[in-house]
Image (cartoon, rainbow, N blue to C red; front, side, top):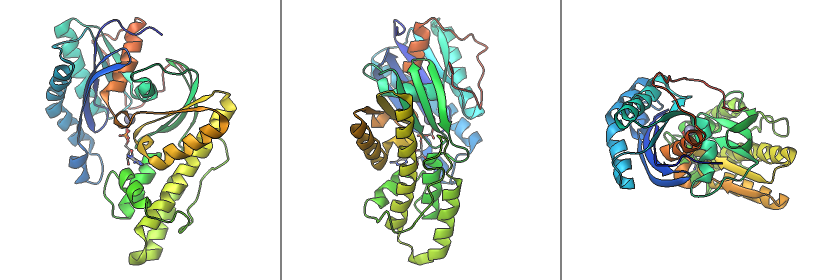
Length: 333
Ligand code: KG4
Ligand code: ZN
């Protein structure tokens, strides 16, 4: 695999993080993230128009900070997330990328957000091919067979809610705020995972996921127990239900693929219990487990830069008509 020969400025604005990074190949020189989480907390979720306006405010200061952090004024290439994501939010990043591409006379390439997540595990080193990637975030739950950089085959995906949504909705029901993954994990530490039985939808069956039944079961549990509910026990039971299903499918997918490497990426990859379950499963199989670095789990531009450096390196260029897309299949499938 040959990366672009030069520095790449990367821009990520697909959801609620405004991020810019400077990379050289898989080496991350700077990675600046301005989160809007606090603003969206007020509404209990992401308001697309508010997200886009916050990107408009943050985009140039964040890019300036990323350039300064890398000790440069400009770069030789530009990578920008143009799909999938919130259209208004993506447009802010893509417009900034086009303006800088024109001003610097630097080639630009549009990057698929999920390709960025998949390649986040190679930051600072080499990516191990082939491997199975479990991608789990607030918007995505996907199992992908990665035969090489740019070659992705979808093994399974969620039929309804994403794993992160299951954490977030459970947290909201338990009064733990938004986003709730970390709060659930912290509460779960002192809890009994067997106290409240919750469903493990599709466990042992195929590679698709379903978390909507779990959400309904949590709602019923909270209604039934009322004020007497033990938040640590409920958080622990919920975490166990999500982690067990994720680990079951990821490890079976690894077995079926015949590969010896499993990677874990996306916001939910920060979860210690999930990391432990996959680490243990891989050890039992003599396989290697590579989770994304904690700072590259949530949305960030560094991972977009790595994917962009790969695509620019093999001669791909986007022209100035580059568009944004709310939905898009993984490239190279
Ligand atoms: O990748 P990300 O920052 O944004 C999306 O693209 O969705 O993922 C955010 C998701 C949220 O649902 C959040 O609750 C979850 O990741 N999350 C966690 C943890 N930290 C963040 N879920 C479980 N355990 C955590 N420690
Ligand atoms: Zn993401």
